[in-house]
Length: 320
Image (cartoon, rainbow, N blue to C red; front, side, top):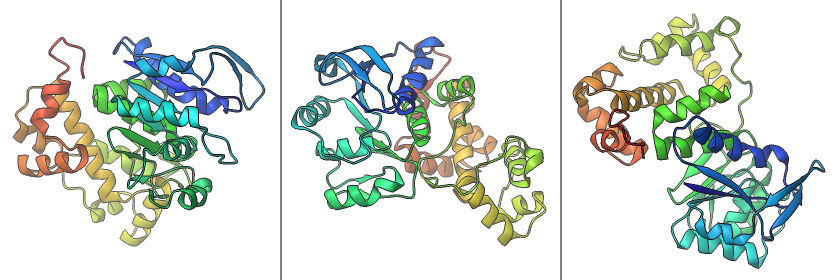
């Protein structure tokens, strides 16, 4: 897969590096034949926001061969995208490339007309600007990323990691995404629906916080009932205190977190075992195949059987 990452004078190095690191790790681990290129409106070199010069940047022709085009950020003043870049993004999308606007890059994607009538997210500081310029775009400032399949946008800064890992997961499966996340030592499953702004990140070790300890414990008991009352009891908190603390720490609700982890484990089992769907459902706590299918349809727009056919890691074929 060819991935073109837009580079421009003034781009922050962190934003430029995130898609290179995540997608490059896929190739470095030999998980799939993915290639990332830095591409600009003119071939040559660019100067980052930090003042560093980066050479070997490809010209706009590289957009024509890209399967994925990433706009990793945009100018902090939110300036409008020029006609050349607008046309490049629109043409890439029209021929079937996935276009991702990470952080402020969502502004450029919107300016290219790819978000009209659609839901999107950007850095919380740019939400008002984007809403004012594009009232036809449904801005959701509460989430980490929004994926329409052909167009993806993500929230501020570190959310780009989540969005890039999400792209790996949708193309290559949960096991591959988890391998990449493990190598990069980042969380493999911060969901797109989590809050963009989390008041307090989870501590490094479960000894530091009862919520972190409960997360670890719950992952070992996914096949059991995990209602809020049981989770609160495991954390030695009242229900009300636990729910409030859980949301403050993770940006989501206990029920949503448990459902997502069950779906993650279901994907892993579908990729790596030949367990019948009914047994997979029981093993991850969905109880029956019908509930598992409903969860898959809502979260991934597919069925467990279709997912298994696409991502079966035992076939000897490159997944995806």
